[in-house]
Image 1 (cartoon, rainbow, N blue to C red):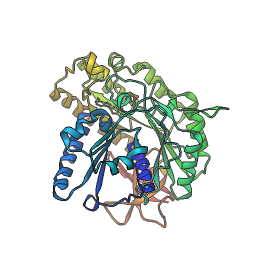
Image 2: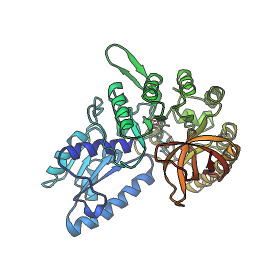
Image 3: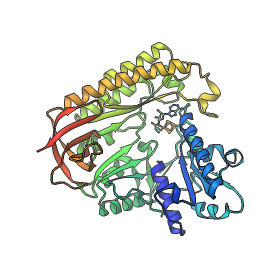
Image 4: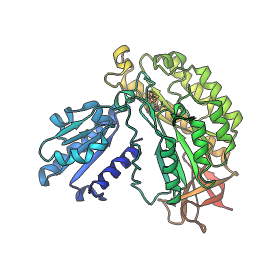
Length: 424
Ligand code: SAH
Ligand code: SF4
């Protein structure tokens, strides 16, 4: 989401006479696009602001904070952190003016606007060398998972128009991009009515896939309560819709899920997984998990490990619960698992996932995949880096390929994070 928002800000600023530079040392204005999802993310930004303030003292610099932290901390960033411009997620149309005015006095724009979708602004692709791009299809979230700050910092859910999404994807394809990830906090609740018909996510992804068979399409994230059978069928029936579903579990215990306000049970989640595996047999499945949520007992935690073993995730993002101010959980439940215990559980989770990823990769040895070439491998000049449809990283020998080409690669070896192969 933030990559796409940075692109929107990039377009607005370049249209207003600003110029993008490669390094902070060349910049007169530095904008940090921020995330508030966990306390660690905010701490990192605060350290970076401190570093920027050192530069500011030496030679003058305008420091701007965009994104969720801007929305959450507002004027506090000006009063206590030396920030000049605070611009929240629905105020980017005014960013150029805000920067120009901040020369006289600092400014904070943080009013949320549930109508704003930045229609008509095509995000600047900051890495023009890449063949993969992200396209935001919706903004905001109103699921109110009890641990999560997003509904407060990004406002109400709203979908971008079909026309703007398709135009953007066609444009990216014509510029040489060969993989697009459609982004939203809960893509399955995408809904756009143009006055005549309503388009849902299954309709939308079909339209994107039909732009060209050489364009790969990915998406994130699907909320388990909303992933539809129709979407699963659409993924199965288009070769260029990637066979990779990211379905955040958060916890394997129905009790914890209830307190998290996730609106599905362990059994319902497992049913969805069954349906995905039956319809798309070669689909990889990844997830997000939080450990140490309020009141999580050792038995609850054991149930999470059990679901991981049942599903055999290919990949997982795993986090220790971080209490966020003003969320439902912060108001209602005690953050009662010690940091030490959270970290112990997290380590156990990471170790299990490493074994599951390794086992999954071992099962791929001997198989042949279509891999899209993304770049030269960073580790060795005679190897290429790409991904298969399942979103696994594949390193293989250099052939007569350029970025964006598809190579047929036979998998010969692996680690828990990478597949190694040779082209056929
Ligand atoms: N909209 C997506 C995820 C958005 S945030 C979804 O619903 O799945 C990405 C991940 O951060 C979440 O899936 C969750 O695992 C994690 N996360 C969110 N809030 C958190 C918190 N307070 N503490 C720890 N992890 C958190
Ligand atoms: Fe947060 Fe839940 Fe919305 Fe995801 S679905 S952004 S976890 S509130």
